[in-house]
Length: 367
Image (cartoon, rainbow, N blue to C red; front, side, top):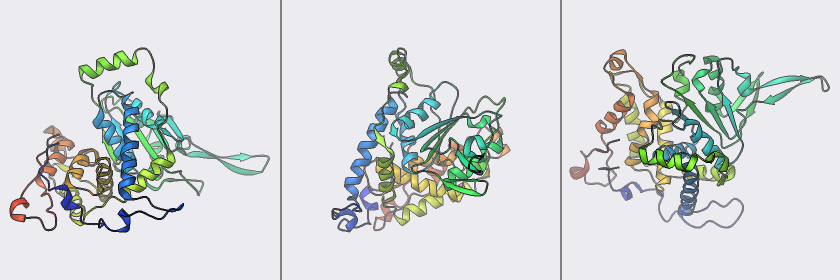
């Protein structure tokens, strides 16, 4: 990616390099590792998970990166594309790369909310109701063809995804951490499907489209996958506890006030676009900065720069925008609108930078 944003080091103004966050901590069970050491663990673990997934999903490193960004940002991923490009394979490969609990839900028109969350069953021996957890009680939940279920069933995931607990018969049940929903849907086939409500789309941190592989990658897939199922050969390369540690490290990545303001300006600008009936929500601002922190950590930095916002803006924001009828008729896309916003909204100037030289610069990366 070509960038004209400011030098990265200028955004690292806090925490101070001499602060306890960057100094060795005393030994002990509750000791917090130095941030540079913790970031090295993020990079090594992410590389192992990426390599594992790319054994199944050949030639799509950018898609794998967004999946890892979403995982480290404590978010949920929507994989939207035509049949046969590896949507379910991506979700299953990520789930199998982590030694944690996982489940798969095949969404169908007759699926009930209780089939997802669980149900209370009367036990005649104890003369009381016992709760039987549903498949949502797992660390990584794969929802296949989520738009085939009715809106009533889709809504069963709203509380799970946002609040990370389930309420059944007035009783709340917390979900284990980490918790991630990876849902797939086919945007082309409309027969027997229900569009995802805006409220549910807004709960997905990012959306990716895998796309067709290039001829070389497709040839490699034929050579490597024709004799055996690569998913059956995958072994975990990380654990739930390790992922929790990586998430904690990402939370410590520094976000300068100027970067926070830039994220707010970018999201707010979407609400003023005449091409949209609905712009991005305040929740999307939170998801944008969380994803930017994860992107910075995967780049080996303990601070966020504008390029991190640019790298995640399209997958985080595009699926939340609702186009007007005129924009749809003109064949405008939400992806194009987000890219235009990135070009239009001024990139922040670091504190102390020469405004005469850098105040009017913009990001010129093309995706």
